[in-house]
Image (tube, rainbow, N blue to C red):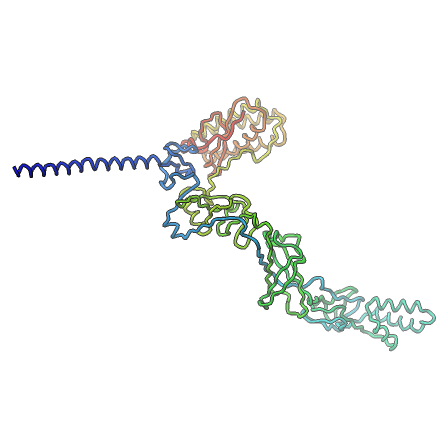
Length: 568
């Protein structure tokens, strides 16, 4: 009896264990299958050639027709331009963000670099006032100081010798002919002889062979322009000099600094020679013309230099403090957050609150400040931008095929032709045969049939020549048809399908312009575009069907492209 009970208990336990193993695993498998199905249902699909395409179901790429492939699971629930990064990657790259706002810029500090130059208003040239030969020259080198009234040269002048003789004669006749006496004295005074020199001649009665020349201004010699023994004419320069009691601080300012600088604005100036001595001055000149070579303009301040501490050629630094009256209205972004692509300025926004989701945003920038840029458009108060590690975020975007610095994911459709063609003589009637032949040429290129493409290229050229000879065309129409004929000549003279397709592209561009600007054509045509043709620059063609059959790739990517507009 006991054995029977024990056997029953053991059998029951074994049954429970077997049941658990069977039905328990079944439930787990069902749970796993459910989770897998749920994950699969959230799977996104993309195109390997056009990663901007994101669809919730498998299918074909709407651009090139290629079969879509599963996208990375990290892109679930995101828009096509958004992407995620792992927390580990963010930590390793030290990516940091900041919330932008307005009112962060109250004062702007502009730093200018420049040097001390001569005050050109105090630069003079010492000249001679009568012709003669330089017998002695007492100013011989640049940098020499000259005082007003100092003897600077002695000149032998034959005319001056004769004038002295006239003076002595006039002195003897002074009482009888005072007008003659005054006229001779005035002539010598006109030659810049001083009153003392004239009186000395009168009282001594001796004619001097050489005459001393006196400095007319005080200054420092810049350049000596004569030598002993030179024969000089009236007005010839001896040297130039500058009074260095006042000098200019001349700075080079960039175009971006122009909005912050103005006349009569205070500027603090320091020199390398006296770094602890600050000179306060005001801006008294801003060059109205930009230097096209350096892309800078001159900003200048006049400095008092009576102690002669400032030497021309010294490097100086100027600091201008500007007040921003509209600081509370400005939206600014850190300079480190902005990435430059040439034509575009972009930043990366963190748009995910619970997880690190990023998105590229194009911005229009205004004035530059010390550590930030004014944002004209593209951002709003409260946006969170990446200000450290932006290049790492951009690299992640490129690897995931998202919108990035180098990939804007925007096809460059050409809605209007670059060349303007005035259509007058070409009508839908005389263009119909040309378009029919053109469509045959297009179909031959779709099939990569070089002989037929050559045949229909010649046929199209022949029809265009007939149109040109039988119709009165405008100048732009004549030029357009000649350009088509030149391209068709290249198309029919080669057996390389790539060269034929390139020539066909040029033919298509002009025919689209003519058909677009002329009167209504009899048969509806479609302007179609492939973004990958012409080395990814894009190319257009005309078709009489909405179906995309690509003449630039043929069977390689037969359905790559889309319809941009229709003509009828």
